[in-house]
Every structure is written in structure tokens, then in C-alpha cells.
Image (cartoon, rainbow, N blue to C red; front, side, top):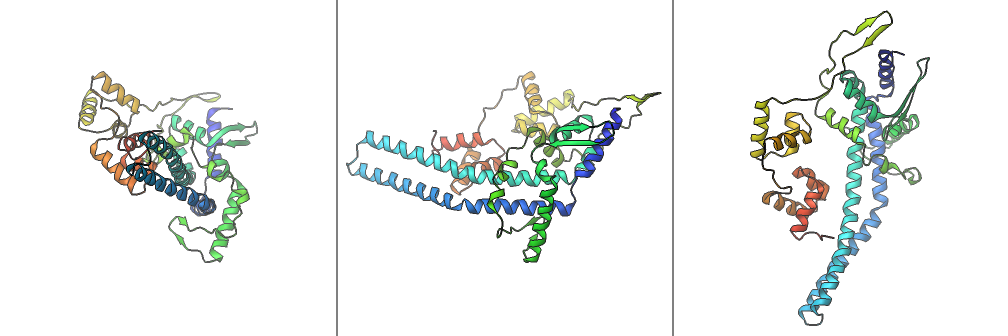
Length: 349
């Protein structure tokens, strides 16, 4: 089978699985409602953890007061304070992980649905390398029979989003929500928690957590507008009596001119991060590092500057999670944690 025929079959496959705007909204509403129910079910555990954290803080203060009164020697105080700090750190990590996991799963759900609702135009405009990325992000395997029948095994989370039963459940949920007069705002449907059953939600959060690197890359390019214009060249294929036999395979690489590298170095010295430069010049972060190394540019040590570190402490005191702080400051969560540890806001353990 010619590659041109294979590509046409895959294009038809994407046409079949792309969801309409209405189905996108119904799926989002139903799954967000499932998340709301799961979070509501875990509220009791979160309350227990919060109470335990407050108890430990009270115990810490009482120990300190007892030490000042001469009742607790310094070595015992240090031992007990370390124990309490470890327990508080573990509780804080569990609370933050709970909120971060749901926030991440919700964001991944919205990104995956947005891509699924636009995949036909994305695939149509993509060059060969980006088409391969689409196939790797959406499918674990693609089977094409001699008669042209196509069967696929989906990658997570599209096995769920493209499932006929899942989509029918979303339609039924939406209809039931409208009957009950539940308000809908924008693309987000307010949750209909009543009547949902926890028995089928066991792996719901895991389905939308930690998306594959291929899907993350595809979503990132789509959100940056990479596929707004056609990237496939208008090249007439070479043909013989059997049909098209070869195509030009485009490799998506960006080669900077010397003047552009000069600008890149100037931007870095002016304070731009490697990530910002990679986005600005549309190259990989590793390529940015190589350009800086070739020009023998002194590299900044990783971490937050004084102003960002102060902002991280302020946000942490205001109740923001490390994931939220890292997104606000545009750095990795490990950098935020290291900064908070240095500021004495978190235990190093």
C-alpha cells in the first residue's frame, strides 16, 4: 500500500474521532463534575490533615515555651522540633499534592479536549514530522488492513475521550443537568454532583495526570499557534507508472544566523532565561545552551533572584501551592522549593 493511501486513511480516522464543540463541552462538564465529586469525597481527609498540622504547630509552640521556662533542655528541644518539622512537612506535602494533582488533571483535560476538537485542521496543516508527533500522541498502535479498514489503540487520555460509551454518558449527563436547571457558564459546566457514583471514578484522575511527553509537545505547539498556517510544502511528488514513489521529507529545524546568535547572547546577558530564548527563537533549550557555550558566555546559577525569592515567600504565605508559584514565576517547582527551604519556610527533609 502506498504511503499516500495510508495517509489518506489516517486523515479519515482523525475526521471520525474529532469531537464537535458541543461534545467537547459535554465531556468537559461531565469529567469536571467527576473531579468535583472525588474532591468532595476527600474533603474529610483534608480536614483531618489540616487539624493534625495545627495540632503539631501548637505542640511546637508549647515545646518552645517549656524550653524558655527551663523545663526542656536544648538537646531534647532540638530533637522534638526536628520530629515535628518532619511530620508537618509530610502533611504539607500531602495537602499540596492533593490540590496540585487535581489542578493538573483539570488542565490536562481541557488541553486534550481542545486538541481533540481541532485535530483535523492540525493534522491537515502539519508537516511530516508534526504528523508523526500527532500519531504518536494519539495512538499506541494503528492497524491498516488490506481492504482499507483502520483500527487503532489509543494513548491516554484519548482512549477515554474517544470512547462511545463515555461520550454517550456525557450527553446524558448534560441533558440531565439541563433538566435540573444547572447553570452553564462559558465552556465550563457547573458540576452536577448529585447522583454520581464513586464506583466508576477510581482511575479518573490518573487518566488525565502526567500526560506523555509527545502529547505535551503537541499541545504546546498547538497553543503557541504552530499549526495556524500550513506547514506542508506544495511539492509535486515524483511519479512512475505505479504512482507516487518518493516525497521530500521535511525536518523541522531552525538554524540561526550569526546575527541572530548575537541577539540571543545579548538577550541572555540582559536577563532572559533559556526557556524564554528557546520560545522566542523557536529552537530547543539545549540548542540555546550550545550557542551560549560556543560563545563562552558565563552562565547564571540556577535559582530565583532576590525579588522572585521574596515573591515566592509572599505567595507561599498566602496559601499558594508550589505548582502555582512555579507557574507564576516561570520556573521549575524544585527551584521554588529550594528557595522556600533557604527562606526557612519549608523543611529541607
